[in-house]
Image 1 (cartoon, helix red, strand yellow):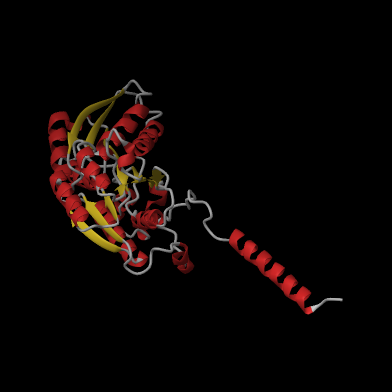
Image 2 (tube, rainbow, N blue to C red):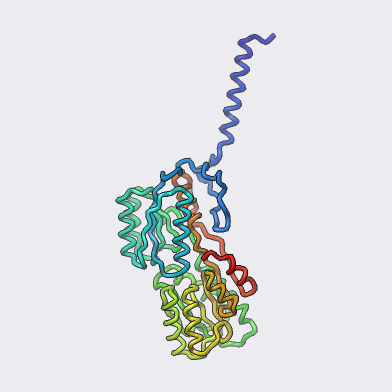
Amino acid sequence: MITPYSRLLLLGVLLVLFAVASVGCTPYSSPTEWRTPVTAEREVPSEAADEFPVASGQDIKLGFSQLGSESDWRLANTASIREAAKEAGIELLFDNAEQSQEKQFEAIRRFIAQKVDVIAFSPVVQSGWEPIMKEVKQAGIPMIVSDRSVEVSDSSLYVTFIGSDFTEEGRKAGKYLLDKMRDVPGPVAIAELKGTEGSAPSVERGKGFREIIAKREDFRIVGSEYANFTQKEGKEAMRALLREQGNRIDVLFAHNDDMALGAIEAIEEFGLRPGEDIVILSVDGTRKALEMLAAGKINVVVECNPLLGPNLMQAVKELMAGRTLPKRIVTPESVFTQAIAEKAAAGRKY
């Protein structure tokens, strides 16, 4: 016979079992769990906001130091960060250093004084960051490196680095050239337009490219000039290379699209046909470059994705929720050839 006391005891046991089962279903039970970074092509589900308990309204304050506005790529990068912060409900303190490392130092010190929750920055050059990053660490503020890498002896000075693999981008350009020239007898004379001296893209893209073309002893880099990732300086540097080398240049490797577009103008003014008389390899994937690729004036474009905003905001939220991030987050990227250029250009946002 079941007494009233027995019923109460049974009910109590069932409630305890239900509570234990509920705890076992709590999301993100592991503090080190990391979700696949959000890419620019994927929408974040509306319910995803519930997974970040501290990220409501303007609870998170992010200070971001942008290195400049030198190219269409950089403008797209800035727009992506602003839009993603707004969508994530993160208060963004944004500063444009206009290619000055000193101005980036000043901005970071302002962020410290403003007691932001997280500091992120895209470094104009690789070196010289350790002292300011130590100041940030002493202030107890976590730091995220975005787009370009830094050279520091203590990797604990930053939480994670989000961005492209520039060395691999250079390798991709080199692999395309090896395939393109596989039946062409040497020597093959290559001109190179680099970006900002000492910047990670210039150093690493050049390194990856040289690593691959070294497989052909008859590939020779006959001229290499810095053009600061701008169309104007790309045109000027290409003019100088053409005056020096004339029509002996077979290939141009431009470290970004803006410099490639400037070089195309210089090549046409010189009376040569870009994409035919000179094979052109570029990096970025802007709409203008893809249109030139479709027109046959560029031969290949290696993608470098500027839309890092969603990745950065997700990392900030994960960090503020107490979760561990991987030290390196690499963004997915592609290679564009003429066969797919027109379709890719039509859907390009930048």
